[in-house]
Image (cartoon, rainbow, N blue to C red; front, side, top):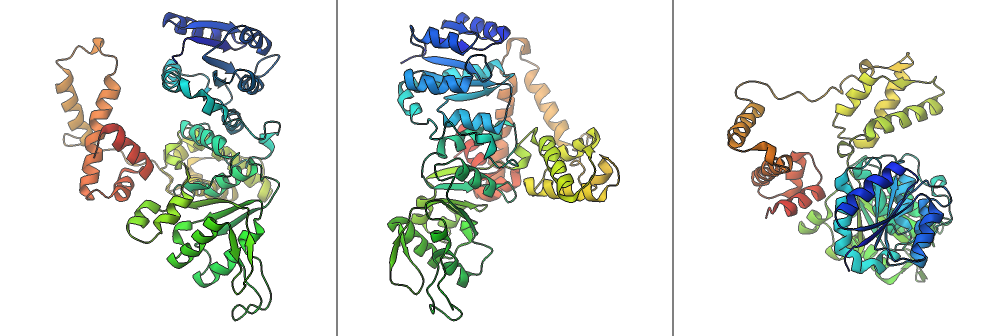
Length: 476
């Protein structure tokens, strides 16, 4: 069913006019409302294929209107618009079943992309209805770990994914580099799920010796082994009716993986040294910084357990891919350092923020937090300067001489474009980037004989990003 009729609800007249003019010019039937009641009245007499709602409107806000539309107009795809690019707004919108979420000011191309996607999936709008929140009336902002911050596009996509999975009991595998905040993501999943009032139990599989990990997971009976002087419940029992977070699952031994798989399949366990099986109702969220697919190929991780855990994959972006978030995180960590250590109010100078922004942060958010804490403690001034962040200088520029890569690329571009009428083109940037990006990825993959993990490391991107680019660029 194609998109034909569109409803726009926004209290800003300029936004309504711009969107209506653009959409009407392209043949869509557009109606406009300046508030929630107006949108409700229009929808009472007409059917709309797509609706664009602002979050903050008089009468009824966009999220309330979204919930109402999913009840009364389940086949209308709803897109939420907001000038406040917060995690709470994004997650709440997606949890309530929003088709998409746009942050103002948005590029006109963003609307085009949404409509194109909606055209392809309008006949599946009933599935969107199933994404409604199970906890609509709760104040999410009070329950989200506050250090999951970010307004970047990468984080907005993460919030959308979380909003879609939190209300179910599905097993989630959280992947990402060390220091990206995988445990915080796991806690966010738990705290926004129907299990939020029940236990959240975390276990780092890499931090506990192999011979003790089984007892930590499954518990033991008195006398089960030397030193077992009393009965002890394991993490599974402690997480009953709640969530068990298994961090660094890729470091678990193969024999223990087999026992874990059996518990997940049968939903019951027997303590070590015991003979009575206990039923379990525990949601599993696992995490790893390692490539489990590669470990499966190397027979270091069980394939059946991998598929059991990887029902939903949530990939946490590295800090270098979160453009614009570094200043926000630096401010947050600086305030927390002041509270934790009783320091006077301090701020980062623009020059210091520039140094922080240019750093690649191989240790991700954890490295940034430690860097800010150290600078706050050691600096005697109220304003942090680049001198407080020694060793974090920007990466050296490519040498600008006749043999530099930049010089060679410039000469080739000038030669290739000299015979073209550039004024008649409208996609030069994407065309050139694609032609440069494809051979770059191919060269990196050839250098490491197709090893995607090593190629991603060389390129400075994660493996999931590399695989998506390989697919989009047609690289085998």
